[in-house]
Image 1 (tube, helix red, strand yellow):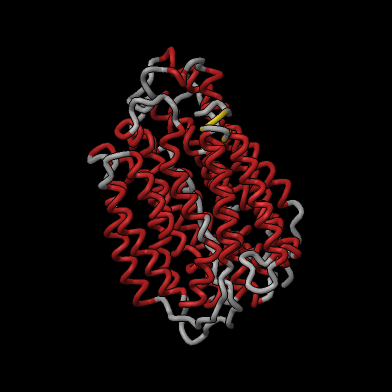
Image 2: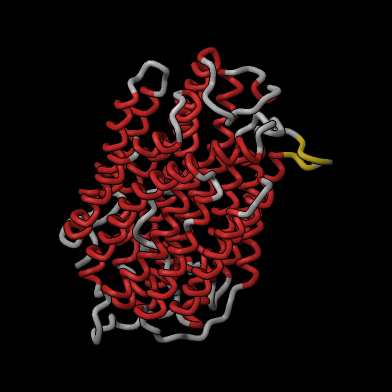
Length: 501
């Protein structure tokens, strides 16, 4: 479920945009790109279901849960850092070429993930996967923004939302079946045929668009990469080192502080860069763009962070198999898949807040429902209810944020704006993955004192009732963190303006 509801805007090339292409229908190219997008979504949802099995096989002896979180965090970190520059690579060499290279890297890395025999190797190969996804993702929106006229982009986003709904259903179910019957390795092997089909279709159907020369802000790339890594690593490892010294004079707090300082230097450097800044800061003068970036950062945080406590509770405290866990997500997938196209068409004719405020509130409410129900007494079927509520909320969340962010930007800045938006979402996901690991371990220590010194780790089957009850309480408390963060997004979107027609 990590990032499982991640449809819609996926970045764009940052050069001045040409007028929408009218000599051919843009829909076949969009359908071809959907294959790659579908593969990325299925991969992330499959991994979330398989996390307990991966921990049991590759990291069985450690009680901390934050080690296995790096299977997700490494992917997201390698995904987030290059996004701003890969959009410009697409503009320089053509979005089709960079997309195909990224798809090839992602597919080959999936093979290497499945062949991994240590947690370290798996984490490293997931980082390579993230690099491939970072090359693919910006190009998808580059093609959409340059081939669809503005008054049809809501409908195009609806297709992305429907794709997400299908992936949310196929990913967990396929993941559960593969883990239960063949082993976690096959959640990665399944990407190979999908990647081959997607490569052929994109080669045949995606148009070769005009390219533009670019200078690259190498200093900006280095500063953003170093700052983000220090911040995420500090958050990720905080509980493992009891928020103290990691080695020598370096402490968790010094890493976090250093990350914030470097990111501050990055922002300062972007303001001072007059030509080809990695992040054109004047884009944030548009209120809708700025507010939508706050909103998508909270959404990225929430959809990534909620998965770990929920899946560990369902599989370890309640004893469900990965397949049974995935079946509880079916209402979410159906609701999002059916309602997202309808929301996309409505979005072209209405104020986005009409969809966004109730959508974000429904997602926050579903997380509170989960927290209230995460105990040993709630009937399993009852978890279908918050799943459905979350699916309805997702349908009114992704498309409105994505389209509102870039609709009012001038054509010459549409690509850069979409790239920044996508990066913001991914940074939110990275921080969510890191923060949930620290908070989850903290809640475990509170509810299960001495858990970090336990001789056996979590992840090797269902827990005895004496342990399952406090474990469930810890997971329920943990899932309230993304619920609280989602409320920040609700407050932010209230400040949106109705886009100019």
